Image 1 (cartoon, each protein chain N blue to C red):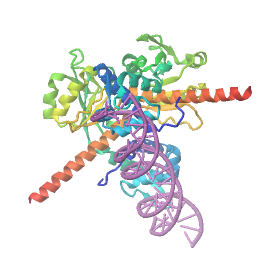
Image 2 (image 1 turned 90 degrees about the vertical axis):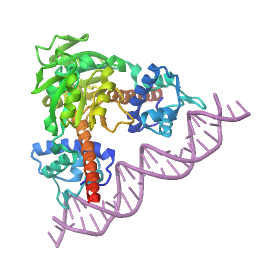
Image 3 (image 1 turned 180 degrees about the vertical axis):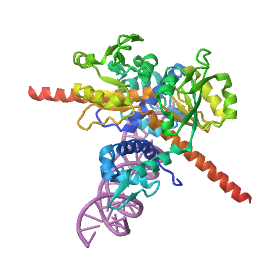
Image 4 (image 1 turned 120 degrees about the vertical axis):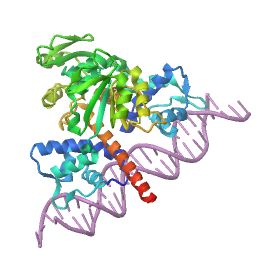
Length: 225
Length: 225
DNA sequence: TAGATTGTTAATCGATTAACAATC
DNA sequence: TAGATTGTTAATCGATTAACAATC
């Protein structure tokens, strides 16, 4: 039912709404107004109402929003109930940590299989998911309808493996390698989790704060002379 | 030297610039124009020149930008040369993966120590970083000037540990727990790495694409009748 | 010198905020 | 009914893009 084009900013806020609504639901809150929700998320009530109204009318005048119903609407907008299938490629440290820790099913995904090149790892099973050999990947993709590939291979392997995935016609890649995967002629969606980008942004903000503090201290020292 | 307030959007683009410039440098490219760089990053030349001009004049008319010099400017703006010190809290799967795989020093950070509650893990050493007991944390923070805490504890521990860090006056938290840490009265910076938010955004885009394809197919089927 | 490309000012576009009639 | 709060239209704000004089 999503006809109109919804902006990126709105879409990036949806998972936060979902998280907060889950939390509210868990703590027994039955309804919430846009201004209350806004307070809890650091957003204006206007923005929240605008965001939701991109997708429909989920509230009720004089009442607000039903937490459980709104939660389910947003979950559905995000595609949680579509039963997307994923595979994971590269069972190294981060790949294994994801298999072990990350609850794919909580977000509506089913992790179908993992792939690795190392014969020591091939054949092992983690949380019910078995690791197959990379050799089997092309065939596996042909015979199974996979929506998302989780890419957790080493840097060097990122581009060739991504190309293999593009050519297999995979819909999307969830990219944990710190490599820019934007292949111009590919139609696969790419979502990046760049740890270093995140840390560097933080580094900037910390630097900025230290500079401000130093400037304030310097002003103070001058005025005390 | 950063006086004027620079927008969030700009700051989030800086690490991408850095990554691309590193790549260009590695492949022997000495200079680049804003339009060429824009093409490679999917940005307009105007935007790139605007972004850089927030921080100074790094280019030269008729020539463009010197790749190595620009790279160093951006690295410095991001605070890479400030020698920030980090500790990691929670040596589970993801914490251990970070210790093992993530090259803190590449981004100017030094990982000084790790902390965990499990006696089995306390005392172990990974990549030269030893794991201390959580009991030692308050004391450690008092006697060592730490800038950033990497938070990789289980969900349940996130809020109490974060509170301990706030109270110790830590500057920033790099948060890998899927918990909203926004403590209103705290002045610590928080940078979130929310895997699930990232996956859910991707889930939305995949859903959107499937819907579009289905709509196109339906139109086609109708017109063929 | 002529061509290229910057830094910056102005114009456009899009996103956020404010306001308010509708209505539960 | 009166009060609260929505959904939406209009106003504002900020970010991106375009244009161009300056200059290497």
